[in-house]
Image 1 (cartoon, rainbow, N blue to C red):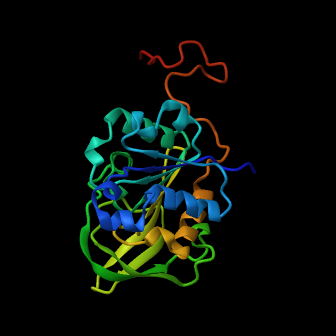
Image 2: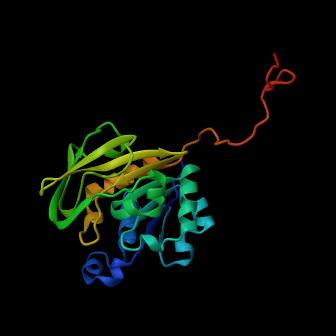
Image 3: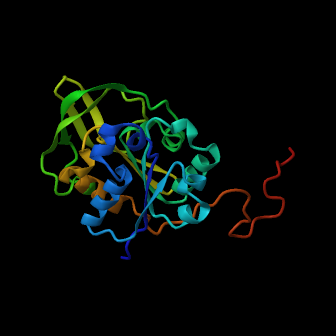
Amino acid sequence: MSQPRITVWHEYRHEHENPAVHAIYPQGMHRALAEGLGVHGFEQVRTATLDEPEHGLSDEVLETTDVLLWWGHKAHDEVGDAIARKVVQRVLNGMGLIVLHSGHFSKPFKALMGTSCDLKWREANDRERLWVVNPAHPIAEGIGEYLEISSEEMYGEFFDIPAPDELVFVSWFSGGEIFRSGCTFTRGHGKIFYFRPGHETYPTYYHDGVRQVIANAVRWAVPRSSAPRAFGHRQPLESLPANAGESEVQ
């Protein structure tokens, strides 16, 4: 199988405005994510950011992306509606989508879920333990029973999303909350994976286990050959009797 074409999208604002975030991700979270994918053998990885023309997601970029990673937080409303609709359409047509952390509030994810995607949160150096609840799932490959992150932002239930197709990870936080942290969905021909960890003030995207999960998710989300999506009026495949479809007058 040929190498998947991956685009890492990131709003890239916190690194410019918060010295603490810049210290952790001096080249941006998108670069750390791309680096992690390179460690796992992916060769065709490019990045795109909010302030580029068309947010870096031109028609050409989207049409040549097999899997799109999305991280956004403070600037969801600055993503153009037209670009968000194009991302949604590409997912429906088969592109994989990996939504990371606060991307749960992004325009594409909310449109694909059809819900508010709201949740509880707390930034207080919680310890996070992500339990593998679906050990046979390919996204959990190589993780073991659980994945532990020493400091992270807490997300807590209720998470206002549709029931996932598959639940891969459930997080427990040292403050006592739990959260559905690894959820898969299918929309049209596209596969979607939501993965919770990744607050900007913590070095989460350098964590070996987190990088393993994201790499596994990319492999899982790569489009596969499938039947075409066909809609609208169609001619019959077989010959129909004369006057077919007309009501018989009694």
